[in-house]
Image (cartoon, rainbow, N blue to C red; front, side):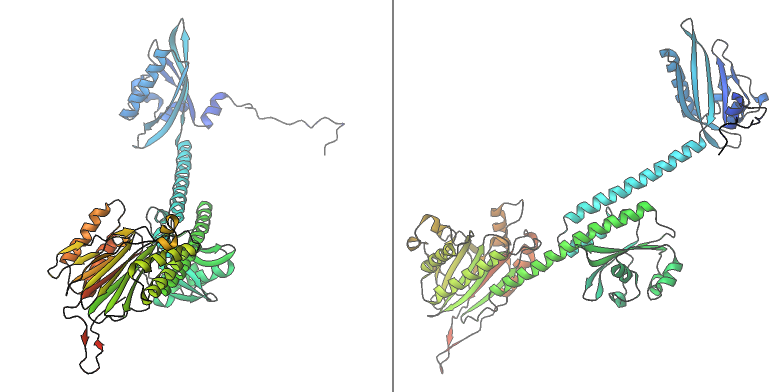
Length: 576
């Protein structure tokens, strides 16, 4: 530290300090001009002439000579700017424009000028011109960076929005392949692996068509990028072929034949638990920028949350669907004197399942009971209530109760269960010898009858309130369901179905019922083939509700008794 008691040592200064303004302007590629508006002549100093690419002998002071060096459109814009400033009495103006140099190149230039007024009139324009090439190059670079950030931000927004609506593994995979989502990252392939036990199962293999069977399942302790990120829970960024070759020799033979120069592998973690890994392959070589790395890490977090939600949805749906299937008949019993066919499809709304059911009940006296119904709601509770109602109706019918009583008792039971659910149902009994038909209906759609010649008509069965609701207005011992009677002739077919088969969002139910009627009229007579046709065609057009149908065709000969044993032989057919 200098001694405070002594003055600082004298410092010698250069002879040309401080720099003359002309030197400061020249060193910073700036030149000056003075435009005398009375004479119309322009004076350019040396640096200004250099910026315009002119030698002193090449410039005669005519401003038109300078404008000839500016592209036509920009020259017109510059003249208009100056004219407006002079007309409005502005004190100054500034503008960017390009100058064409002798080598033919165009170089950005900026001018800033002050307008001097005397006696209320503009008399001189004094200003500077400077090279703006580096300045605009930096601005363009910043603009490219900003544009890249906006693109990456758009990728995050689009992908996050799509992932928020994903409710299955297929939905998540569709997002990974969406061109407006991760497709904007310029990756040529996107891979998704999920952890199953001690292995990683590849569920999405990207867009390169590079399916490798031996990599479908890999162990977590093997030397693969996905295995590494699962073990370490840290992303891996590979920037060259050499890194692939040296770091992952087991993977390299499969990468070498692809147009891939770099890759990003990211762990998928949800609730502090690894559930999988994401891999993205790029055609380019080189490092990933900080913005790209941060973006991919953020996206991996969103994908992990969506993937976990989809996996939980599918597990819950499988559980609920398994419960629902357990509540439905394991098999349809053979019915001598008739052919039956049933079809069922569970709801397609994420983890939801519905309460649709069907049943075929062989009864004494050559009779058969048919039930079809739909419990309100799409959850496991609806499936449980459906099973209870199905078994109750089976028990009441087996006890010999007539259809109205069986339905009334089922309605009272549903009320006593203490659930807030209600159910629609149709119960029909057919005597396969006489063809006598008895129908009761609780808020359900009417049955459809097909005659032997193919003509069809709806059976206008009298109906009561849905099961469970009737008890709200009537004492259990007073519940009544009107009985509709008719005849099912030999070779005629009775169709019972739930509304999921015909309902379609945005379409009138009456129109859909007409479509069903026409399909039945023109369809095959065999119940099995007709059931297939209705499910294949109408089932694809319907909404996301579950659906069920039950077909019974009375044989022309009816039940046949053996002359030896007296027992009926069975020639019916059914298929669940």
